[in-house]
Image (cartoon, rainbow, N blue to C red; front, top):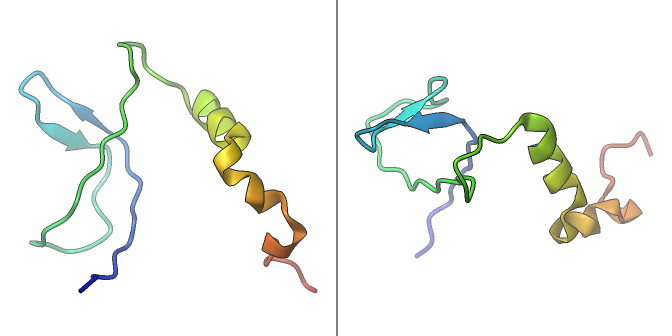
Length: 76
């Protein structure tokens, strides 16, 4: 049986003890079990928001969003 899930994107920092510290509170009340996926740069450099947005905007995985049929936020 599959469970419906929601995704939340929040940035954070992993400290020297490998503990994750989020930059803001989570938008739901616990305690509750969650599944966590951590995205980290391959090197020790930090990434900036502009580079992140550019990578997402040019990723071919999202090319289908350029299709006019996907534009559901119009008055028409």
